[in-house]
Amino acid sequence: MRTVADVHGDTWICLELPDERGAATDAAVHVECNSGAERVVIAAPRGWDETWSDAELAAAISARTAGSP
Image (cartoon, rainbow, N blue to C red; front, side, top):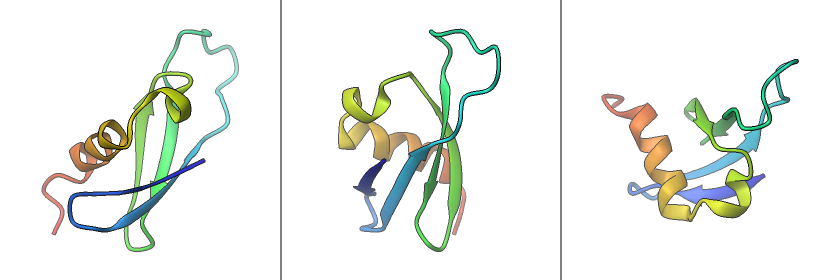
C-alpha cells in the first residue's frame, strides 16, 4: 500500500488488487487508487510499491483521471 499526492494536492491511497489466477509472474498487476472522491485502477509492474517513485505513481493516476473535472 502506498499513499501519494497528485499535482492538484489530492491524496491517493493505492493498494494492489489480488492477482488473477494463472497470471504470468512478469505480468502487470492491477492497483486500485482512491482519493475519497475518485477511484481509478492502473496497471503497474510487479514491485511497483517499492520501485516506482511518487512522481511515477502520480503520473499513472493522472493519466487515468485525464479529462475528469
